[in-house]
Length: 355
Image 1 (cartoon, rainbow, N blue to C red):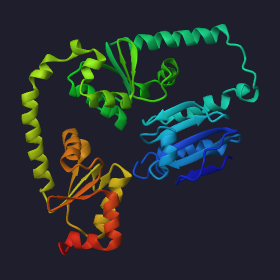
Image 2 (spheres, rainbow, N blue to C red):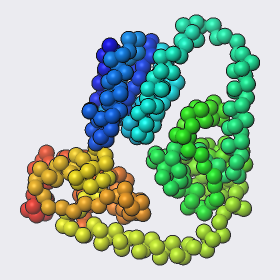
Image 3 (spheres, one colour):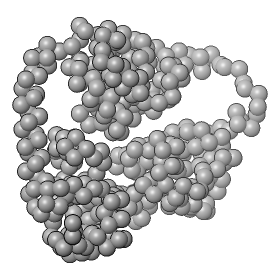
Image 4 (tube, rainbow, N blue to C red):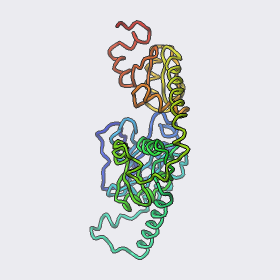
C-alpha cells in the first residue's frame, strides 16, 4: 500500500525518482472531495500500489502547485514518470474509469530511457508516428485562415487566457476557427514541440504562428491589430454594421447591472447559489455572511455570461465573488475577511457603519 501525501500549501514539492499520480481536488466539488467517487478510486489505487507515489492536492489552497501543472478545473489527475514528465492527464469530467485506465498505462510504462542516459536510436515506427502527428497538426493549423488553439471553446472557455484571446478576436469581428486542446492530449503536447511555443492559447494566421495572448495584447494596444495580422478580408461586415446596436446594448447592460446591485441592501455576486456554491471563494464568503445572520440576496454569475463580464467593467473589479452594500462595491473575499477581522463587517451589515 502506498502512502498518500496531502498537499494543502505551497511548501510540499512533487518529488521525482518514482512514478507519481497527482490528484487535484476542491472541497466544493462533490466528486473530488473526500468521500466522492474520484477520491474513492484514488484511495483504491493507492492501496494496491507499491512503487508509485500518490499526491492529493487541494487545488485552491496550493495555487503554486496548481499553476505548475496548468490546473484550471477539478478533478484533474496528472500521471508522472520517474523524471517528473507528464505522460498523461485527465482534466475534469465524470468518467472515473479513465483514471484507472491512465493509471494502468503509467504502471506498465517503461523507464528504460530514464535509467539509461544513452538515447536509443529512433525507430522507423517512431518516425512514422511523429510524421503522422506533424501532418495532423499542419492540417489543423491550416484548417481555417485564422486558427486559435485554446482550452474549451469561444463560447465556453476553460481558462482566463483563452477567454481573453477569443474576446480580442471577436472584438474585431473576425471569423476564426478553433481547437480545444483539452480534448486531445496528443495535440496538446505535440503542438508545443511542433511550434516551439510552450503555452496556450496559440494563434495562427494562414498556417503561421503569431504567438500567444501577450503578443495579441501588444498588437491590440498598438491600435492596428487587424492590419498587423493582415486579415482585413476576414472581418465580418455584419459585425461592423452592428456597432451602433452594440452601443445601445452596452447601455442596456449597464442599466441591468445597476438594477441588480441595488436589488437588495446586501447583494452578493457569486459562482453558484448560497445553498450550493460552485467555488471555494464563493463558499467562504457565504459562510461569513451567514455567520452574521445577515439578510442578503445573491446572483449566480455562472448563469449569465453577459452580467459576469459586464460587472467586472462596471465595478472595475476583475474577480468573483463581489459584495455590494446599498449599491456600493465592498470588495471580494479578501476585503470581506479583513473587515471581519477588524470588526467593521458587522457594523456594515447591520447598518451601523460610521463615516
